[in-house]
Length: 545
Image 1 (cartoon, one colour):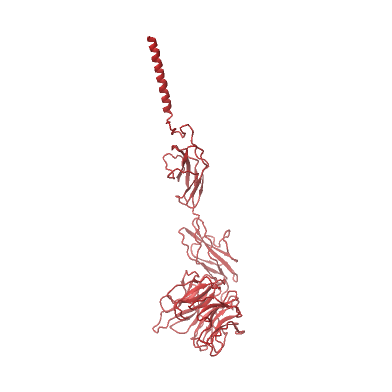
Image 2 (cartoon, rainbow, N blue to C red):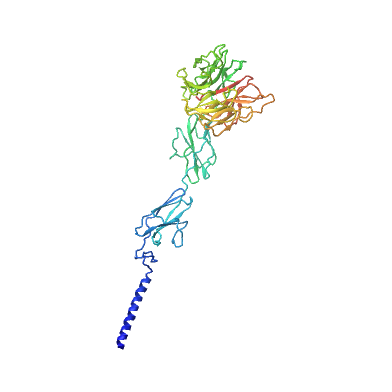
């Protein structure tokens, strides 16, 4: 009996020990019924979650794009991205960039700074929160890839063996400088071209002294930032350097030096050398007025307005050779009543058309016509006064003055406008409570000169402005009015063929008479050309030969 009891007790002890071993064995696995974390990157069934492979990074402008291969795991929860500015050897205790697990295999980091190198790894996380080892590391360095805006206000002025260029400063905070490009043909693209300057230009002007007189050059300027990004080229300007003071450098103008003023009915057309002011030639010689001269592009003819008969008050447009021969009538106003007619002729750049103003519909409007008097076309049509047309060098636009209140050439509020020759696309250039008139387009088309009393007194000065209405510059400055109330004035500007100088009519010392002056387009070096007590103004420069 005692032996049997010992046998049963031994059996019970063995059973208890066996059961305890099983329980201990289960606990040592650290797994619950739900198959949780084993602490070694495996799932509850002993499967290890692999680190993602194929991680790659692509740096952009203020961004880094990351991508990797998908991890094959049935219980995949998503991915974490880690970033540092130094190498990442361990992700323990680090916070991922993403606030929640990423479900896809790509990520764009836009919280980076250009010029900094970043290190990235990616990890996989299962649905139980187990995280894999980090992937292999990639680096990326985002950089500035945004170019500055193209410079504006580009202009060129040709001299004797030189071309002076200028432009407005670019507004980029990271501006590095500027490049100048030159060609003997139009520049449509600067890709692959070498700039004139060996190093970036820090200023907004450049003098090109590597040019030949008699050659037309095309220029553009670009802006470059500190990262080397280059803007698109600016608008193009042309310049033709030449020896100044050539025999063909003449100015035509109207004058009453025969003793009769234009207002009383008799002014004539003369030409004068811009260098030798004693070299004066009379072009017209009548008992009635001839005014508003305009030299043809080929230099062979001068257009002007005139009353060619005694007692006739209406004016017509005529052309004549500079030596006074071969007079031709262009328009035929043929209106019996009132003072009216045609005025202010301006040649198109190719010489095929003449723009002018006419009162033939009741008020001043702009028209164009062939030089032989055919194919008359009306450009403007409204209830105010449109006058003093000026053709752009490319022939695509006509600048003119327009009154806001219906005033005439001597009163009212005039502004400068431009329009297509077919009468479309009207654009306002100036907008002041003053009188802006007598526009004249620069040879490179970048600026329009005009006269204005916008400085607050009755005096008129010469200004230039871009065709879009920006970049206003004052060229001349008149004296204050005297006690007699007669204003000093600078009026009727005209550009030299090289764009270096502007001719104009000037009254001084409160005199009612005008003389012809020239001045640098930048307002420097004023010169008096005519020296008479008579009224002489409305200059027009002969074209380059």
